Length: 113
Length: 113
Image (cartoon, rainbow over all chains, first blue to last red; front, side, top):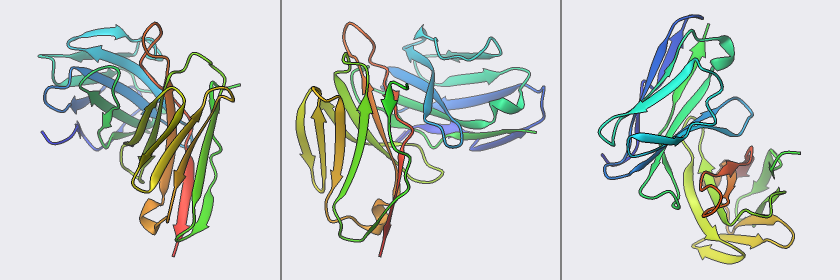
């Protein structure tokens, strides 16, 4: 596609439910990143994929968070047993190489009520 | 002290003004420096990407890196209302460290007609 596509754009979920966020990167981009942006905060790194493997998942805040990438393309970020503090905008980015600027998607705005 | 410091603003200027946006950092290992622009409810968009010290110009935008002072700047000439957005600086160590950037919290810029 022309850009990084994320779905859904908005998600409201009840505390304790699981959610899945999807990222479709730019075709051919081998590197894929997930970030979280909370109100008034900077971008918080979550996980980095190179192809289908995740050499750096140091930013995942707890074991309730997991992510996978298949076919070197689409990635899914899963949050289990959501908590109110998980409410944020989840941004996905991709790049052709790791030493190159990112292209971000528009994000998924997650609200946990 | 955060690794990357950025004044959140808001910075309000009249149309046509020269805007100066700045970040300071504490990690002398940073080698790659980036500026992103983020409009409301959109993902960040890469504006400038520079390596090591020096200046880089692209249209109305100039990025400046002073590694000796651990200080980076983004200048916007002839600012327009369409430049109103949040500007995020980011930096990474690159080879031998990590290419995953650390972001500042962003500076909100308002250009009024």
